[in-house]
Length: 478
Image 1 (cartoon, helix red, strand yellow):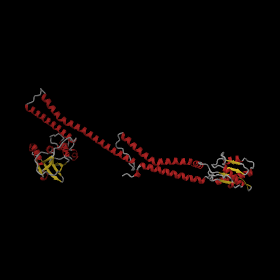
Image 2 (tube, rainbow, N blue to C red):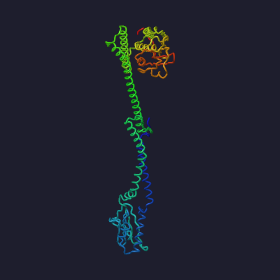
Image 3 (cartoon, helix red, strand yellow):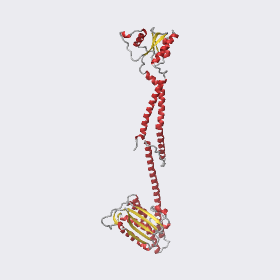
Image 4 (cartoon, rainbow, N blue to C red):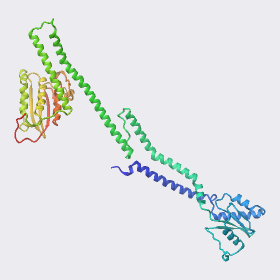
């Protein structure tokens, strides 16, 4: 189960929110700092009015003939507040071209003259707080500084002026940090994934992407690695299949060439008109050609059988049958050769395994191949045993001979097509080279397994078939 907080998208969203909050906090702190340390840039209205009043009073004392309007404009023209000076003699000055409102002007004159406007016919209308400061010269009231409410947007412009450059710098730095913290690791991982993808595209099936983390990138990397493993396995399987195919073609060609060469040689000899052959020699040549022809026919049939089983095209006609009768047929078929070589062949069938479930013809083919193989590799005077015994949930069929055995290094390969063991297991007779391969294919088609164990003087081929529930009546069908 993937936790939401491990998602790459959630991390991006959460990091964005954190970045925005951090920028807002930083700007708020900066704004408070600038407000507390920038009184010269943003003085309070009361302080400004008092400062202007003191400055005007000092100027009137030191420079009584100075141009009041020019002085106010030059000294306070850069202020964000509108500064108006109303003198008792009716002179006015301001740091802006905008005239002082009539109501404020009347109120200022009334304050200078000591007039009570509450008794006037028209009362002045003043909106917002107005800051005033008296202008005194030698203790005498000479005028008044008036600061009307600032127009809308002035404070916002001042704040924007204060925060424009620092705020931009904070945003740039925060964006760079966010990009480095959020996207740089993801970019590195994506670049690594891109690199291994390109390597895979060039044919390197051993590359793997780093799977660190539990987000979407890690899951993509894991899926890529699974795909690469599957491709590598398929490539290995294809290479192995191609190797086996080439080896099989080479083996088949070699095995077919041997009898064909012998047949061709005898036929060429028989066709030579200048070679005199007696009747006995000619008959021997014809017998050899016939024998090699039968060998070729058997080899082709075995190849066809093996191909059918390996391609799952062979069908099994399964039923209950008596394994003892199968053993009897095989022994009877090889009895002449066994008697001629003084090889004893005996059978042992446990009563619990007299009836087994399978294809009797195919099982007989397997047992016949194993017995023929045992006869070829058993010395004269030896013995062969065919047995059927129960083992747990399986029926075990075994063919054991008293030959010299198979070398341990050859045992893993005895079921391969045309595999040749050492000379110690040959006795001059040749089979098709496919008998054990066919036996293995038939047994596996029955959902069973075949094994071989061998020591000097004893070689045993063991077949394990699934044991089914026995029928109610004993069958003798084959």
